[in-house]
Each structure stands twice: as C-alpha cells, then as structure tokens.
Image (tube, rainbow, N blue to C red; front, top):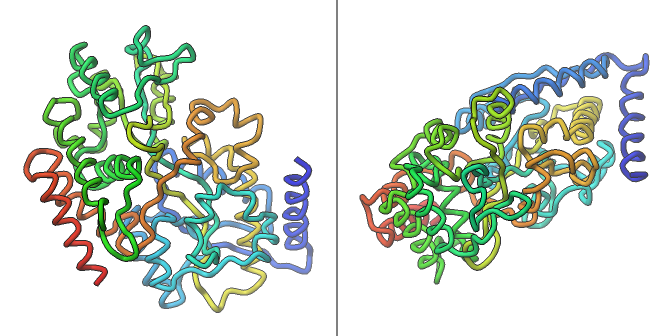
Length: 425
C-alpha cells in the first residue's frame, strides 16, 4: 500500500507541476476504438479525469474497431497527424513495430507516470514489449474468453461444486458429457459461441491448441512438427461437437449471446466483456436464471485461455514536446490508479495493485476468474497475427468451414499452414 501511495504522490506532484501558473492548459488528443459498455466506462473515466485536472484536458475520439482503426493510425502517424495517446491491442504490437507507429516507453517514462513494470502481470508486460525487452505500450487490462454458465440449470449436478463454480470438467470427454446431458435436458445448442466468422472461432481454436501446448508459429514456421497434429485435434474437437448438435450452426456474435440469455445454451464461451450484459439482464430481471462465469476449464494438457490486452500507446511523433509527453504519462498513470472502474466492464486490470485490492476481491465474477491472468495465451508474436489479421481471415475461410463439415480438419490445417507461411516467406 505504501508503494502504491508513493507512486500516486509522484503522479500527483507531476500533475501539480503541470497545473502551476507557468503552464498553459495542455490538451491531449485521445483515440480509442471502444464501443458499447467499454465505451461508456472509458468516456466516464475521461470525464472524471478532465474534471479533476483543469490544466490537462483529454479530447477523446472513438473510431471504428478493428482494421479501420489501425489503418487510420498507420496513415495518420505517417504524416504527423496522429493522436497524442491511443488505445491499442497488444496482439497488434508486431505489426505496429513493422509499421514504426509507436514510441518506445522508457523506465523514466514509467516513473513519470508513477508506475513500474513490476506493477503489471508478467504476461501483459511480455506482450507489450519487443523480444529484447523494450516496452512499447502500457497494458491496461487482460481480456480473455471465459465460460459463462447457467447456475440454475446445473444446480444439483456433478458439474457444480458447493460454491457454485464449475467442476469435474478435466477433459474433452468430460465437457462432451456435460453438453450431451444439456442436450437431453432440452438445451438446443448446449455450448454457444460466435461460430460464424473468424473472431469467436479463432478464440475457441486457439484455446484448445494452447491447452495442448501447441503453437501457431515456431521460429518463423507455421504449425511446425507436431503442432499440425495439435491443430487438427483442436479443429476436430469443434467439428465433433457441431456434428453432435452441441454447438450452434454458424451463429453470428449477437445470436450466440442470445442463445445463452434465451436459455438455449447452458454454457457460453465469450469474452469477459459480456459480463456487464448478463449483469444488467440479472438486475432488470430479464435473464430469468442465476448466472456466473469461470475460467475456461482445462480440458487438455495444461491450463490456457486465449487472451489479449487493451493498452495505452504513444504514437511515434518526433514533434511531441516533453510537456505534452509528460501530460500523456500523467493520464496513463491516473487511468491505472482508477482501473477498478474499468474492471466493471468485465476486464481484468493489468495493474496488479487494483487486482490485489479489497475492492476488487468483492467484484464478482471477476475475482473468481482472475486466475486466467496466469494462463493467458496471447496471439502469436507475428505481423500475421492479432486483431483483424491474416490469421483471422484464415480461420474464417478454413477452420470455420471445417467445423461446420465443409472441409476436413486435416485439409483445413494444411491449407492454413500454406496460406500463412506464404505471407511470412
């Protein structure tokens, strides 16, 4: 606690210096891609910061998520018209390095923000750094898929322990048994996820691959060695569930959520960002059953869950003044200190003092699934990976069709290997 308070004092001192009569008001141009509940919470944080800091004002702009955002960043930074600070997916870091759009974050920068690398989960700091350890962004959260489940339906079964958490799911066979039971109980699509499109299918595939210890890339080679067999196993598992009617046929994102809230699915594997959806439905009485969320069970050789991080990044702008950079770092430090509000969006703050606080321990289901931070499987560190990347396209065009019976698992994995390797060679 003393360490946290001393850092906060340092940040406050910085802000006080910026607020002295010798300084004019510093305007910080901010870009993000945050919509829905994420956007509401971030706008509230920006508003609070501006109210508390009249001499540092954030001017926020929200752009379209995915490829449009990153295209805008690349082109604007190239001509010196980028923002002063932006949100960034850490899965996009390798491509950002190739495009030279980010300004490195030094230890002195962290100190100015009242932070240190030790304040963050190791997985997120690794994902935010180059291979030689240079920090390129400051993590704000770890967001991963979790298993949302219908506690009411599972009450009294072997799959719910005395605390209401999922249990006895230690293998693919165990999961299949649960889903088969749910099918017999009248759940038309026992396990729902976004099975149409690359996003949801990628997260399911990569979780199953990672639980086998598999890797997409090894020393620049796609699905090298036994990774090909592990990819086939992951694809075939999903295809078998689909053939048995245990997962939906090509459910769009919104439909997959509705299957769970509409009691057609007993389990729903999706991002932590849907936690507010089900909380809101519980509070307004529209959900109709008791719900909770846990880390995705370990069904294979090791615990692993697809994950990414929202981070704060500073564009590579040689013309940025030290005054502006210090203001940006003050913003970042303040956001970390107030990241409990961001946790309300379901995310796990990357800032450990927040996660270790008594207030976070009372935040459910977040405090229960925080264990996944140690098992986070981030996307491969490559220019072909990350949000809106060629890997997403390959999953959409090859793995998803294989899951739905239009292509064999072996052919899908082989074609994915050839397609992605061609982009690296």
